[in-house]
Length: 76
Image (cartoon, rainbow, N blue to C red):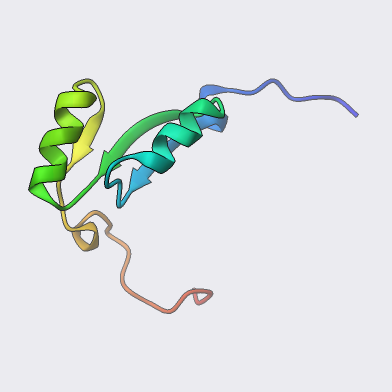
């Protein structure tokens, strides 16, 4: 079996509901790279910005981050 070389895309993640970024830190420790994060709470956003100034941070309500219409999971 041929092993495929891992690319950045294979190791990257986007964090939603980031909070204190505990899960994000665990994923980074496992070798994944954060591309962006989203957190709605402005106080937490400020903390993330201070701790991670280079991380793209969306301080938005997650419902506006997608163009997909809302539909039940598993339907097309």
